[in-house]
Image (cartoon, rainbow, N blue to C red; front, side, top):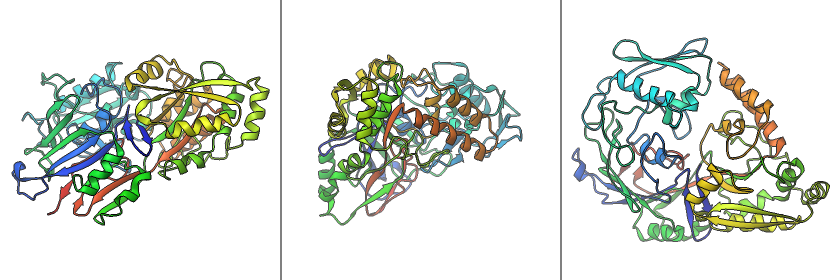
Length: 500
């Protein structure tokens, strides 16, 4: 989940996700000596509480460490295509029950030890057998992970899972070193183009170029992730030349960059779903009329205007670039008059509700929601809390009425088929369709099942999907290889380079 605010004075992305703003310094050319290559400073908002990629909640770690330090059998591009990484190739049996992965040779961990099929088997089996590990549920259908010879790994399933490759491109498929004794909460040993150099909690996390990387070596010598929250300060840094790239730039501040013609704004697609979630397990949200009324009271076009147009209407639980998408904007469309009628029918003409929101979001969207709900007779109190408090109260304990966050992860429809998730939503038909989508061996069939399920979810009105974010990345001319799509979910900097 990525958390972002589009206010005029602050831009925060965090989360169970993090957003990045890139700052480059020391941009001098170089040869193969890392010390002669550029240093890149990357501004982030929310710092992970620790570095344990196995157990720490959220995609803050995914964005920083996956692709750059940690790698898996397969990976994903910024446009969500699956690509082979540690695996040289992959094949799936016709019945969808056997996945075979021949491995690339000559891969070493950044501590110098050679990666083996045993490391792969051990790594995936750890996730498969430990319910506390991130990605465990994604491997529920995997019955065994074995090696076939010295250089091939085979996964056997009890039933097909159309989402398995996607899961393996995330935490479930990461390959760690079996023999390593390092503490995962403060260190990381991987096979990627960068090595973890240091983590100064509360300040920065530094990666350095891995000179022994088995693939194409990085073209920058060092990346320093710094924690920066103020959007105006980020804009000033770009104009002053202190920074050369910044992701997730605040759309309301673009005019501040007009004075520097070398700064180019790139718009990218994301799966960042800014969601007003209802606690469907408690009253008054157990009444569908109340849920529908809230949805119909909200003018999404007005919200998009407030955030400077940095998003598109979503209407349902699946964003445009994910399988199963359908335009569901017409379901519970803006209709304040009917919202009042529904509230009256539900006996909720003077409804008082509380919105719990992480404090780094600011007040821009929350203020609009307060105004729009007031117009139909709902008094909305905004409870702005520390992110740690939000994680405890909302995400873990489900102690809330309304919550506003960004669910940045792609392919995460399964949250709506999980009654234990903090949404508190349950529909057996949705659960069955999702299960059928996973069992489908034909991607078109899987997508069709998701499409049916998503429509049912939208009609149940368990949340209001305010918008899917459009990511703005500011890149100074001469810099290439920086991703411009899905930057709040993963930030692969392997191809980053600087000219001049």
